[in-house]
Image (cartoon, rainbow, N blue to C red):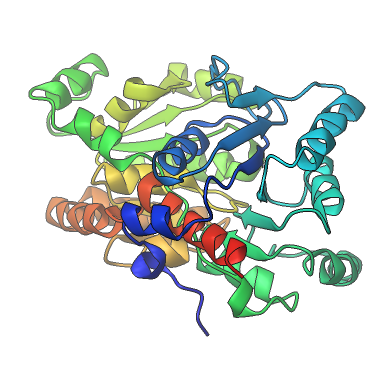
Length: 390
């Protein structure tokens, strides 16, 4: 089975440029301009010889991304579904593009764009979706019928990692139409903050973290499916056994008030609010451990970010990035989903063993080094070239 993970598709910029059709234009449709998406687009534009235009379904869908509008080749579609679809159809039919690249198939604009492009230009589809757990039988059967037809249309899939590739294969897509992209964050941007002299001590002092305390960081939306209740229950047990631990929580969501109340009532809990940019990287720099207690997590870019910051990660076994990034006992610890007891044990183990934390953090940093927007772009563009040269 050849899904081409890691460096196999990562050719040099020169070979990408020389092998691509002359000035081949590419149209991309993403749902929203999250930072990791914009980093990928910037990396792709640096090495693709033709034009890359990006359409966003919304400036903010899951949260406010502080998007200033991007460049002249970036467009946020109308909130009106008919007007947005009219724009997509006009672009596809314009003759300016040799290929359409879609961010999945779940949103109506995406699968309708796929259908309209059929017979006009080839389509590639990226995805961060692994096989869902506990799905009702009727839903699995319905997907088997629908996806069995829908997945014949794309010329190539560029899934985020191994579980996502296996999910696509489960619907009969051959390995010859799958190229793993390696979903990434800007590793260098994160590590730039870590290298600033005196930054770590200053940030920890600002957060009220003494030199001897162990800071455990959660970053993400404050929603029930993120395992917030499991995390709080596990930490309550942990602090009884390891009093020097502190829990840092960064994010926004429907459980925000509950977290604020916990931070007020419990000195060992700090609520940092929603963080972006250097403020977020500083939180990683101040932490000793990162936890991802999700009950549902297609990928979990926080894992990439934490590993780039040199932190050991504790994740549930439903986190989509875990099979590719988290080597249990080496770069982190994988625990059963919805098991506060196992989370408490994992946090206690790392909290009480500084040498193990440092070793795992170092291995995590090494393991994530190749998962960069540049390599994600190279892997994706190699798939584009393969499709366009077929």
